Length: 189
Image 1: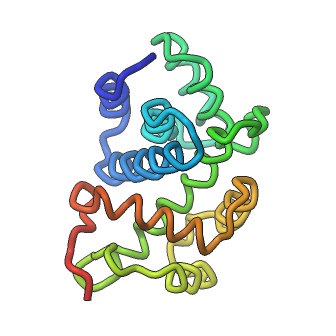
Image 2 (image 1 turned 30 degrees about the horizontal axis):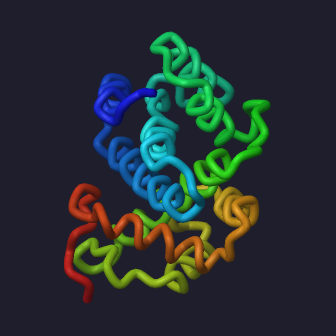
């Protein structure tokens, strides 16, 4: 098993952008929360969340990302279930999402980024008090956070077997737990 400190080392070695590092922390938090809810190992699920995009700055285009990242992780003897889950978050990887771990990383990736974007435009950049209805309204605005794939957000909740409102609320709550690390620690309005 790879520990969190080693995973953070890999992330920071390949990821210089503060925004991508915060995204990794956000997805890690959402994954840990879902592990607790779905009976998974929080450390394994958290590491999948942290490392899912670690190679994105080096290999930003499909199909290099996350395939090249998987090669790096294998060379560092990261366990295959972690690598498989990371590969499964890309529809084009050839790795179908078969486990709750696989489905959770897919469901948490785009939504964590979108929820973060929603919080960043609020007064005080506060995630506290952010409501699922507000997030859903922004999802309908194609001009807002336009790089977020809305289809992935909807399909992620469906594949995980959770109602979209419930999924959004769950991710918001998970991110509230690390709001200061994400720069979302402002007081709610």
